[in-house]
Image 1: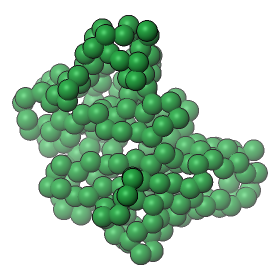
Image 2: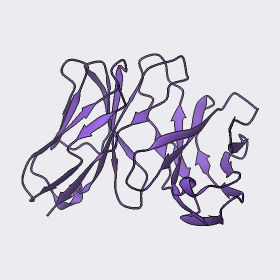
Image 3: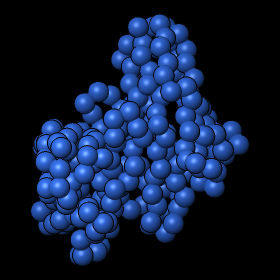
Length: 118
Length: 115
């Protein structure tokens, strides 16, 4: 079974600064995907960024980038130029690659509560 | 279509009562997932549908839980004889297979409180 660990329950950052959220995972799979989801207070979860395990290049989406270290099973999220709207719970998630028709369920970590201070 | 919707958004019930939640996925999505999220935890997988077929159920889904997706569109999750431990946020997500580029889109959730 896969497990996802987020070791930082809470973090805070000043507006416009950079923050890095940590995530490690455990799996025996070779083909899989990793995700960061954002859950703002009282709002629904949205995808921030995804990474395919077979890609060596780290994914980037505007101010969000990841540091994917496959051998170390580490997948951290860097948020640059933090904005007040980035305040949310951030969840790291794992999904193994399955054959057609199989469940591509997500396995989530416990989350990191990020607060961006003005 | 603006996304995945769930109803009700909040439900308070007494222990022992039955409750039913509804999820309407994004219209062209043929995959639908239910997750449960308790305080301080990430969401945990409950069950998965492809079209109307329920293809996987978690061990978390006791025999008091049943889910359906009768026409491959909306889905319902029913909890019979609710217990206080069932108090949680129930999340629904839908997706469309895209050759490994699948993204699950989540609804706002139904928050259940069992008294």
